[in-house]
Structure formats: C-alpha cells, structure tokens
Length: 493
Image 1: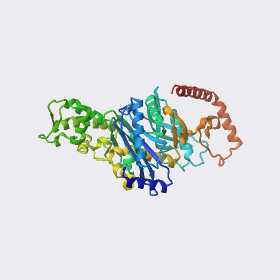
Image 2: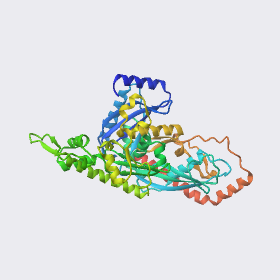
Image 3: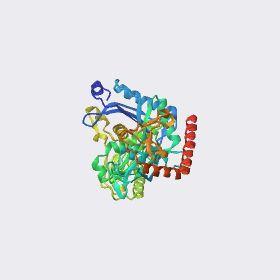
Image 4: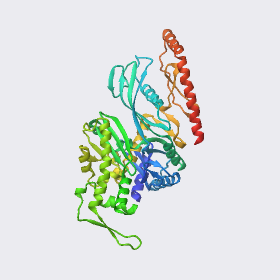
C-alpha cells in the first residue's frame, strides 16, 4: 500500500472523482486503523489511503488512557496520510463498542395532520426523532435509532411507507445506547487528535455493512465480529436488524489464557495464537511441540501444540456459547438460513468455522469486506480484520446519500445535526417541523407546498390546543430543564 505505484493510483483517483472522501477510524483494543475511501461511478469503494497502528490505552473497547489513545490515533492518521500525500483528513466516522453498549426494542406512533397526503420522508424523520426521547438509565445516552418495520393504520410489516396514505404511522425501533462517559472519552481522544467525529457507529453494524449482501439480508444471518477486546454481534432477519450485542470476550482473552496457562510472555502468547493456534484441539498434532527461548539464561521451554489448541478451543467455545444465548434470546437460533458470518481479526483462527458449526448447529463462513471494494490498491484490505473500518466508510456514504449528516463535538456531544435529529417539533403548530437556528443547529423545511387549512379545521385545532395546553406546558418545562442540564454537562467537559 505504500509503494510508488499504489500512491500514484491513489492520487489519480483523488483527482478524477468528484465524490466526497470519507474516512473510517476503527479504535480497537489491539489496533487503530484509518482508511480513506470514495465511491467510483460503479458504486464500488476505492481505497485512497490506509494507516494502521498498535492500539494503546484501550481495553475491551473502552478508553482507559486518553494520552496513549491519542498517540495511537495520530500514528494511524499519519500513516494514512503518508500512503497518499494528496489526502486531507478532517472528519472521521468512528466505530464504538464495549461492554457498556446496550440495545432495546421500542414502539413509536404518530398521528398525522392530513390523512389524504402521502407519507413522506419528513413524517419518518419526525417519528424517528421522537425515539430520542426514550427513557434511559442515568448515565446512558442514545447512539443510534434504527427503524425495523412500520405500521400504517391497520397495515402491519410495512418496510417502506413513503408514498402511502394513512392517519396513523408507527414503527418498531432498535435503539442502541451506551455509557455517556465512555462515549465522551472517545470524543475527547478524537478531538485532541485534531479530528472531528462525523458520527459514532456501532461496530457490528459497520462490519455487517461491509460483509453482507442483499441475499444475506433476505436469508437472515448473524454477524459475529471477533475483535481484540470484544466480540460484536448483529442479527438480521426478514430483511431488518433484529438484535445487537457486545460480548466482552475476544482475542485478548485468548492471549491471556495462553499466557497464564502455558507460562509465557504476552508477546509470545500472541505469536503462539496467530502462528500455531487452532480452534479445534482434535485437529492439532499431539506429537508437535514449539520451543520458546528461556528468559535470562533459563532453559528453553517446550509448548505442546495440543495443549495450546485446548486453551484456544475452551475460550472460543465460551464466546460462541454467548452467541447462541443471544440468538435464543430473540428466537432466531434455528431460523437463520444464511447462518453465521465470522469477521474481525479473531475470525482468522484455524478451524474456527468448523468449531462454530459444531457449537451453534448452523452453517458458518468467513466475511471479507471485498463485496464493496474496487481497485487493485484494495487487495491488501480484503481481510476480515478491516471489515469494521470499511463498513464505517459505507455508513458515511449512506448518511451522505440520504442527507442524514451529524457532527459530534468535544466530549461526544452532538452539536450539529442534519436530517432526523435536526427536526425540532413545535407542539403549538400541530406537529409541523420548525427549523432551529440556535447554535447553528437546524434543518431547512420547505413550506411552499403546504396546503392551507379551512376555518373549521383551524377552529378544531385551536380547541385541541387549549385542551392540551396544561400538558404541553409541563412538557416544555421538562425540555427547558433538560436544556440546562445539557449546558451544565458541556461546562463540565
């Protein structure tokens, strides 16, 4: 990726394509990866820059040391810029994981003003925006709201209600939340690295975008992303996201088990895992041994390949047992025709596919991010460990193409939104969107095509307002209290 030929190809692509360049930043427990990409005229992703650095200060997806994490981010960005000097990186899409991540299912409904008009994107945006008011435990904040299926009046399981007519529109939502302080720490690390977070994306969703296709979405699959600190799970069924989870066991736990079980150093344990490890003990050669040099003149140590495999299999079986538990939790352990797609750096363990099929009772395969990649300069990235970062770029393009743009400021606070989060609801005008021009936040709403209401409709609406004024006052009071709380949070940052 760093030779002169690939650099010239990157510079040529940068000059010839007018699409925006989007950068994904994967802050993992063992590595930090920065990839810059842009879609070509065929809709494929051309890689324009790549940088990878060892991760420090991150444990199980959570930042534990701000300064060390900043250095790792800066090093990955530097290497990305070195691979293509014509690049300029200011905004990044960042993946997030960790044991603090939670998900819940909610249902939202909204009564429309006019049943005769077609349902449009603004109706969907307002419905999604309402879900950001969902009650969460103290200290948590919403990362993403993902609609699953819609209900228009009495018509259930509608995947795309735009263009339909109806009085009432509702939807089932998958809400992803996380610890506010953990999110702020990621924001601080990125901010102090001289970058701005365009959006935070749950890592299993990013990985799913990189390794799935339309057939997988229809058949139903479970994406199992085995990283360094966490194993991320995303389950899709009936063409929609059904469940997400973060399992706090992954490659680092396997390495620690090897280190403690065989009495070797951390670096030696990692090397044993990647070079000689296998996920099936029955496939290991019982007569094979690995010689480890002794420390400070001590005699060399011989490690049994069979014992090494038993340690790896025990931990991998535990991780897969957690996957089966989550699939049973949502009743999909026997319904996923597409089986399990393994991705992430830990998915490269030898014989892991066979162990996965044995433990889960479902088919399994490796997921490579080459489904959406194009160009010879992307060959080195067709590796499961880069699926999350490639998926972050795809998420950025999804936001760009749908107009759903966000900007997250220092400490992980959303300070500029475009699209669904930007629409502020004016309760005194019967749910008509109203732009908010304070602090640069707002979305332009075109009211030129609005249909004037009759006098009877205006009278009825005025009567409803007067009846609900007391409730509205309480709601507005709570909103003002929440506003001052947010200001206090920003001061603390």
